[in-house]
Length: 440
Length: 118
Image (cartoon, rainbow over all chains, first blue to last red; front, side, top):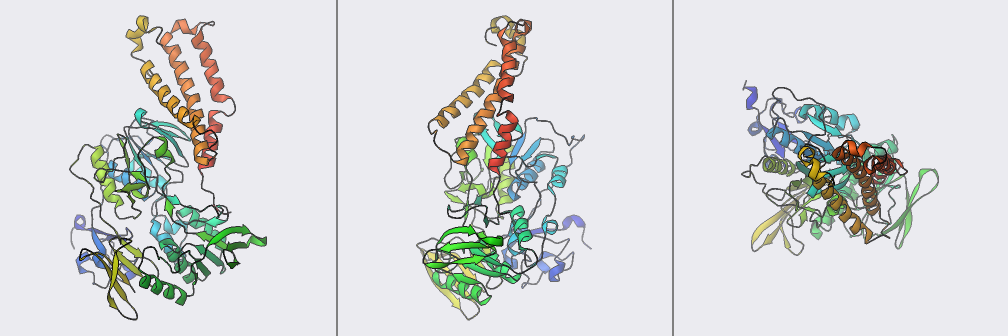
């Protein structure tokens, strides 16, 4: 038996799942204590299904115990303040604590700060998950372990970088360094009323929808056939519900995939039982009697259903940043190496940032960003962040889609291979493959 | 605070919330309010939260400035007929009169919450 400290971890570049050699993956028949190299090549990520090759070594952040004991009830002392307790906020807390066992860390969050893997929400219904099974560690337990002062159900309302002051709904905080990890919120078009349309972007919303669905099959209309819309449609369908998926484009994921690929996805989703309605524009949602909702459409009769889910994309909530005169475009603009915003001592990471003009809303880069920020705060500038396009994996059982690299809108796609079950395509710039795509 | 600086500056430098710190906070707040005043008919939720934030910060700053004023002045500010002690009382009026600090924070929290179907 190998020494326990030799166990290594590997992170899925698509969904952020961590394979721990010590624990193995018993659900897939990989015994505890199986080395990553010894895993058969046909093993896939148990969460999102990408191949073994899309995993890379992961160095878990080890938190040093404080010497001399640090009281858990920290005072309002100056230190690091983090806004947001999603994956990014906690990753930042872990990284900062690993660098410095004593610095006071305060984490401000609108929710309870419980930790879960967001990509799991897209496949949680078919797995019969619930809040308890999805939460990996409660916010309180994490706060205690990392010696973080956790301010739950607290909203950050104002920021004055010149004063190093963050204002919240539970009082003002001074900081030496501030880390914004606010995430992104669903972009809800005006025609979709918030009190009638679910948006599955956090655990609370998912739990609310699950409660509403109850134990009986329901008819769910999903508006928007992007990545989240397609994954949810597939999951709801597999869980036994009737699903109608609407999009303004004529096929699902048409803005990301070439026509041939999105058409294949449409056929696969319809084959699984999803009713797809392309080139369809929604004009409004209204409540009818007994919980029935009506979705009105342009040039088509209204749809009646039990629940409406809007999957119409994400936007960064820039109110705090704009009020503080931080530079923003489609997110909070950060230095691509240090993740510092335009204001001194203010950093940002995760879904809320914009790097080289592009938001990057994937799990995998977050721990690297957190490490770069923690190093910058500690004055170590030798660990810069390097941005690379993550692997995109669509967790649709009816037709899995994997994309390496980010396609450009005017690029030419070519078919690499095509069979009845499988389609491989690639996009080239100046004769070099910049993006590859696999369906099936 | 500035009035007694020549006389008491040598001990007042041991206090928190010194005149330059208070001035910096006031300048920051004034600038934000000037910006908000450019678009008074912007009824968006984001705008309203920023207005409430400025209003709450005004109350908090009044409390700190008036207390610091009295601490800077010492016994001469404590007298019944002096401005610093009266300012303490009036600063609390700003902080407790509806909408009080607690109401403002309650309302900002309400406006910040995500609306989901029930």
